[in-house]
Structures are given as structure tokens and as C-alpha cells.
Image 1: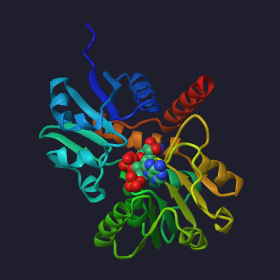
Image 2: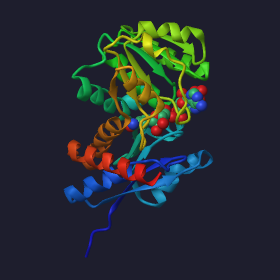
Image 3: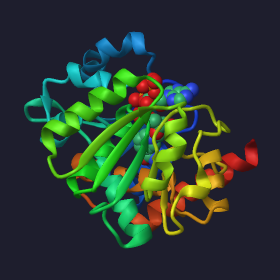
Length: 287
Ligand code: NAP
């Protein structure tokens, strides 16, 4: 008799673009693990019922994506220290004491930077676009590795200020500033940074108001968003010679950390990256 699979999945709204099911299912098959990973489209109004639904349907683990990462925090009975500090959860796991929230985005971002450049955030002057769940993880990763400064730029000023205050309480060695997204000051600030992180949901093709020519030659552009084609941010980064860290690599490295939490096993990262890039090509051929 075949073993009933353990159920994992991802919640988000919308969820059309996720590569996570392909990565996790391929990895479980490769390792012979009895798990199935499914996409669940969960509208924000249904989020308060999440844990009840997970219990009723025997879901053992979930990834959490936009727009739920920060809102799900208050629902969870238990949080890992990193998720609590970041204030955002991207991974939920069933433990002996019930569901527990984790954040593997920060580890994924730091690991992707290291993989592309061999460097950490130490001493870097970071311009962070966004103040949502992904941006919070990026800021935490940068400050934990002792970035020299982080300038948080966001559409809603109050969200940037809240992130800045949270970081300031925890990290004393990194200077934290905020600025609204559409101001002349932002173009001027581009001369003072060397690492630009794009962590907004601004619609695909949106050109963010950056003075690309003012970035230093060895600046690093980190794009959290991923899809079948390079984003406007990535196209500009390539055009202006920035070192590029892409969202598919970050996705794969955070997936490896979530996979370890759920299964106790290590992902074969080169294999998982090949799967993610294959999905990207398949989606690109369809659109
Ligand atoms: P989120 O919590 O909903 O935050 C969204 C952010 O985007 C907020 O800062 C929001 O600003 C901003 N924003 C939304 N619409 C905008 C617009 N039209 N113009 C300018 N800013 C806008 O989402 P998230 O979870 O942080 O995810 C953000 C992106 O990162 C998503 O595309 C997600 O897929 C990607 N991501 C990728 C990975 C990966 O592994 N590669 C991991 C995490 C996230 P306000 O504060 O003003 O609302």
C-alpha cells in the first residue's frame, strides 16, 4: 500500500506565479520523501481561519507569500526568534506544540548575496525599496551582517518608519534612515549607496525613480521579485553594469531553508535552481 503523503503548500493572493510547488515536489521525489506540496489561493478575508483550515485538512507546513507575511504573525501561537524579530513569517511548520512561524527569507537573501558576490552585507550602504514582509527580511539580513546604513524607501511613509524603528531598537551598528518613494531626495541619495534591494510589489514594468547613473560601478542590485522575464529593475541594473542578484536564486535558497525545517533534509541547491529556471522558461514560453 502506498503511504498517504504529508501535505505541504503555499498560501498567497494572488498566486499565479509561484515556482515553489515545482521546486519542493521535485526535491521530495528526488529524495523519495512522502510529501506533496500544493498551492492554496487564500484571500485576505479568509486568513483568520488559516490555522483551523490547516488542522482540519492535516496540512503540516506552509510557505506564506504576499500579502500575508506580516498579517499571519498575530495568528500563530508560536514564533521562531528570527520571525519574531523580523515581524514577518514565510514558513509555518507543525511541531509537537502546534503550528510555529519561521522566516527563511532573510537567510535566503544573505545566502544569495554570498553566492553571487562572495560577500556579506558588512559595511554596505543599502537602499531598500519597500517595507513589507520581504523588505523586513532583507533589512534584518543586512543589519544582522552589520551593513553600514540602510535607507528604507517606501510608498507608505508610516510603514517605512515602523520598519526603521523596529530595526533601530535591535541593531545599534547600522544607521537607519527613511524616505518617501517619490521625492527628489531619493535621486540625490543614490550617490551614497552601493547595494540596492528591490522588495516592492510595484506592478511589473514600473520604473522606480532611481538615478541609475549615480550608483558606483561595483554596486549590487538585488531583486526579490521573480518571473519569466527580467523585471524593469533588473533590466536597468544590467544596463548600468550593476552586479545582479536575482529573485529565483533567493527563492530557491529560502526554499532550501524551509525544506530543512519541514523534512529535516538538505536540498540539492543546484538541482533546485535548475528546476526553478526550467519553470521560468516554461512560463516564458506560454506568455
Ligand atoms: P507585501 O508585504 O505585500 O509588501 C509589498 C510592498 O510593496 C510594500 O512595501 C508596498 O508599499 C509596496 N508596493 C505595493 N504596490 C506598490 C506600488 N504600486 N508602488 C510602489 N510600492 C508598492 O509583499 P512582500 O511579501 O513583501 O513581497 C514583495 C515582493 O517580493 C513580491 O513580489 C514577492 O513575490 C517578492 N518576494 C520574493 C521572494 C523570493 O524568494 N524571491 C521572497 C519574498 C518576497 P506600501 O507599504 O505602501 O503598501
